[in-house]
Length: 79
Image (cartoon, rainbow, N blue to C red; front, side, top):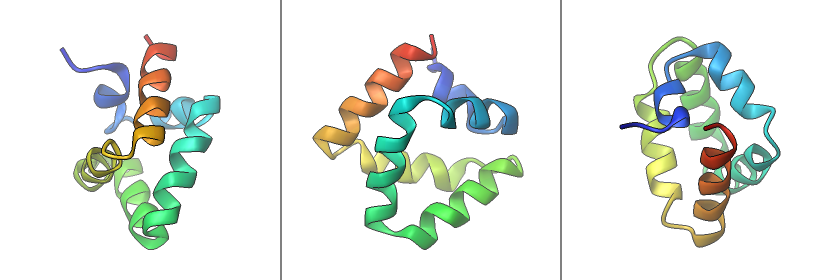
């Protein structure tokens, strides 16, 4: 079963709620350090209902141990 963040990628209001979580800042910082333009583009697409690019960015980011821990904490906080 997908976690709340996974299910929420296509829901603009759910994305906004996730972004208010403290761990979101850690994740966004890690994403922006990689490719700020890709993050902006993926976020805009997700807010329009297309979550594929954002999902790919988060999948790539999960290889970073610190970011992965932040994503796990965010997942637990939204359950």
